[in-house]
Length: 134
Image (cartoon, rainbow, N blue to C red):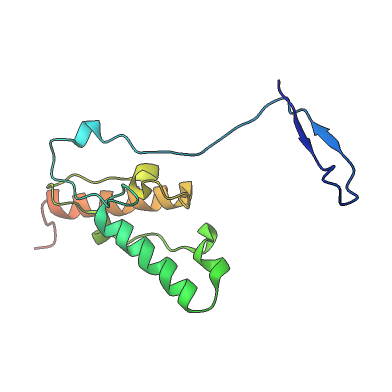
């Protein structure tokens, strides 16, 4: 439903018209923390993700850029799942998982979310289940 014109700038380009049937825009995502507004959750001011994980993601990106591999800095497929300690918040037994844990960062993958859930379940099991080995 709309069109866009391109080319024809005088440099010998041929003019063309694009008429897409559908346009999908995935920009400006902001996590909704209304549920956790009264809880002690330390959020990164830049990404709006939990601070421990946000600082770890930033450190990994900076290290990749400094290592001379700028493409790896934005490569979501090369990231390692976060450790369980990065998923904790100051609020006891409250964890931010999934896409919301990455805040505005676009590098979240569903496989990372699965690993996050596995890590937090193991963390909660250790804390809540009685020790059976005695």
